[in-house]
Image 1 (tube, rainbow, N blue to C red):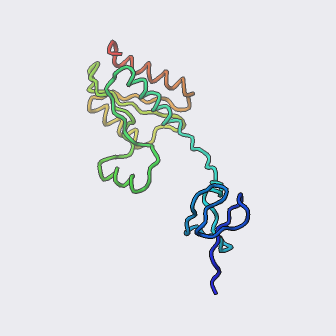
Image 2: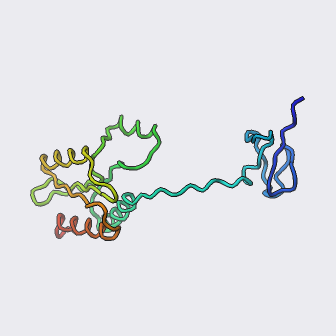
Image 3: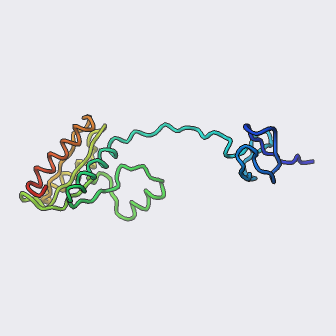
Amino acid sequence: MKREQMWVCPKAEGCIDDDEMCSYHKHPHKRNLVCRSNTVKCPACIPLPMRKPRRQPEQQLQQAYVIWLRSKGILHCAIPGGMRVAIGTAMKMKRAGYVRGFPDIIIPEPRHGYFGLFVELKADTGTSTPQKEWHKILKEKGYEVIVNPSRRGFQESLDWLIAKTEAYLGEAC
């Protein structure tokens, strides 16, 4: 004979039936969470494992740089490269035209004989081969490309980016 499935709530007194509410959290239980002992634990009572947050210094640097660009009213566009996305999203991006190595930010302002400025942000890593190839192609096509030197501190990198952008744009900043 099949044993009746019970909910076990570690913070409540004993076990409770499917139809009852968790006496500690006052919420209804769901039937699909079964543990090894043929009991189902109250989802709200099970502590979730804490995941160590990923360090994303390049993304944080990009966000700070974009805030500065917006504050100055500088026309720009960011490319979603380097972001961690689900495999399905990555496949859609690739089918839609995303290619590896393309610079992170575009500033479509012609200055000093260039058609625009492409900005490559670096935090911990060096420039990859596809990135170097894109930089070469863009320079040949008449665009300015700047690459933030990696392994600098956050504020030093941000200051460097702002100084280079102001130098390129001149009085527009």
